[in-house]
Amino acid sequence: MTPSEKSALVRRYFELMTESDIEGIIALFEDGAHVDSPFLGSMPAPQFFRKLGKASRASKLTVFDVLLGENADSAAAHFEYDWTLASGDRIVFQGIDYFRFGATAKFASMAIFYDTHPLREDVGDKYATA
Image (cartoon, rainbow, N blue to C red; front, top):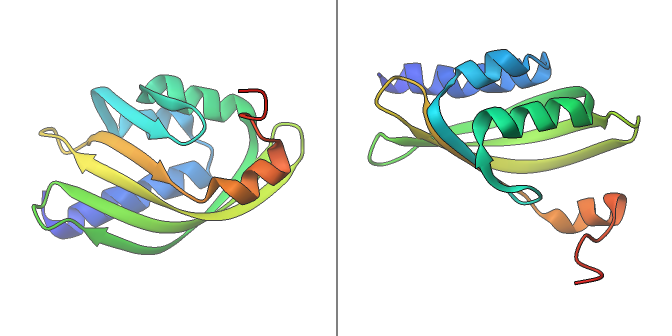
């Protein structure tokens, strides 16, 4: 894949997230791909996105930058996530998604990074009883 194709693939991911096209998002990932999430831990990409889809009513994602890795096998995207949960609650935050490209012109993995402190104030401290 060329650098512009990689950048386009990352941007397509965010378009599909805004469209809530869970099966379309899953199709961007290789078989065996995984997602590392601050709240859900590491899980297979299809399982993660289906869980996200069930927890969501609407999403609007705004991409600020897509940065390609030095070794041409990764990309990072800085974005804002305006997320309406299935409950109707709305959360807005910024984060970074870090993608690893696989051999098949799809994503092999994705790691999600954001400051969880403001979100914990909204959804509760899951570690309070730990």
